[in-house]
Image (tube, rainbow, N blue to C red; front, top):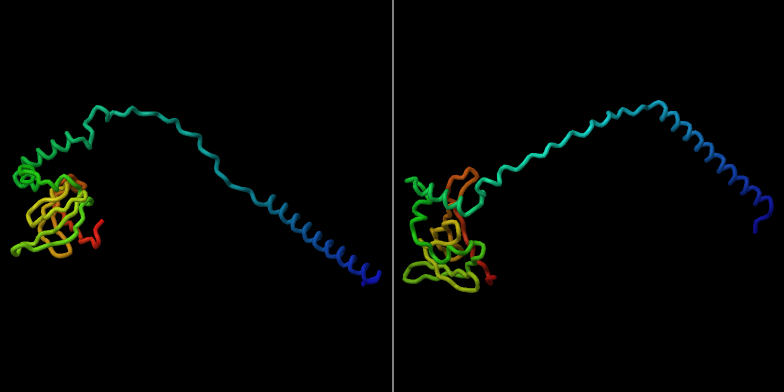
Length: 178
C-alpha cells in the first residue's frame, strides 16, 4: 500500500507531465498559425465550361461497313483482279468444313492410308477425315501439311489496309479431345 506522501508525489508528477504536453501543444499551434499566414496558395482559377455543339450523324445513309453486301462487293472487285489470292477461292465449290470456324475444330488424331496422311478432326461431336489440299474454316483455309501432332494450313485474310494476305495457321493435336 502507498502512503499519503507517495500518492501526492505521483499526482504532482502527472500534473507536471500534462502541463509539459500542453506547452508543446501551444507551441505547435502557434507555429501552424504562423505557417498558414506566410504561405499563400497559388491555385489558378478554373476556366469556364465550353459550349457543346451537337453534330448530326451523317453515316446513317451510307453502307454499313460490316454488311454482307459490302463484303460481297469487295470480294467481287478483288476477284476481277488477275493476281488476286481470293479470285481462285471464289470460283471453286465450298467444302463442308468451311462452314465452321477453326476454333470450333479439334484435331483428335491422325492416320495414314496407302502412304497418304489424314488428320482426324472433331467438329460438333462428328469426326471428319481431311487430307492435304482440302479446305477448313471460314477464311479460305487450305491444308498444306499434316503430321502426327498438327494440321498446317494457310488462310487468306484481309490485313488492316484491306489487302488480302496469306496467313499460316495450325491446328494442334488435343490430348483427350474436348
